[in-house]
Image 1 (cartoon, rainbow over the protein chains, first blue to last red):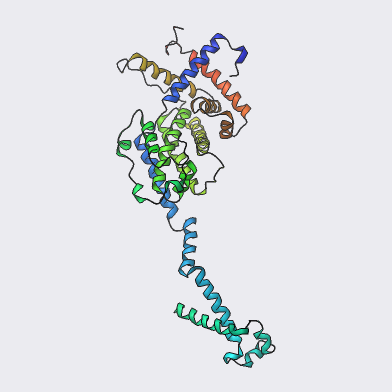
Image 2 (cartoon, helix red, strand yellow):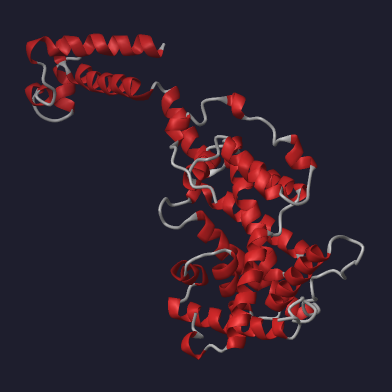
Length: 139
Length: 235
């Protein structure tokens, strides 16, 4: 070590004895007894249980996902979105009997309102069907 | 320390409830020499030869086998180190339990690759020990010599001498300033390299080298004063 060149015979003896003592210490570490192991493991299980109790951060995340899943996850959200768009269209579409009055109420001609939603090529019918299907699912 | 290569996926961890066997009876029922070795070999035989961080992740996910594996892997390390720094078994046990509790609590937030679990634990132990020693200075008596009076009828002379020497080393360690003791123990008993010791002690490697050199010089002086009692008188 640092004693290097200046190391005397006595220093070397001391160094060797110290190293022998360190080696002995390494080979005979103070060991935990069974009671301590049980205490530590008991804490471990308690902390694991605490991680899982309500109010814990992870649980909150899981509960959030649970709500999402209970609502049907992404497929259900897709259905809800479709129903919402269809509802919008149904509400504003004079072809389903609401009439021109509503178009007048929301300001402007009916054509302007209908242009908010693409109703070309029978698409509107599809939306209507999907909206009905969504209502059946929800029921 | 166990070094492991198998990944959690390789081992299919978490998929087999049957693995959740109780802590083996002999480990709990017996105590005495060789306990840590038995516990360690037990751990290695089991699925707990996983990397530390994988075990921590499993632990945070509620895997009880991971809790056992981590307990078996680290409690002996922490206990041995805490005892070397404190020289008092009861206090070392308390520090060990507290340090492990902190490991359990950090597990869900453990950031992979940031620190070795060992290194982190050594640092926690150092902080806990510092608190204890500070409290001791305020309220308690100074450290006592830890070696029990040697009973001449207890065994062969060599064993007695080993015991006396071990006790003398611990007593000499106890007499060192705290930082010197920590550096010497981490280097020469835990066998760590100076950069890792510097990280644990939150200082530079040069400071670590200096602490170790001064600590060993003081240890040498303390032990030289007892050379006859330790069987060094003939040489």
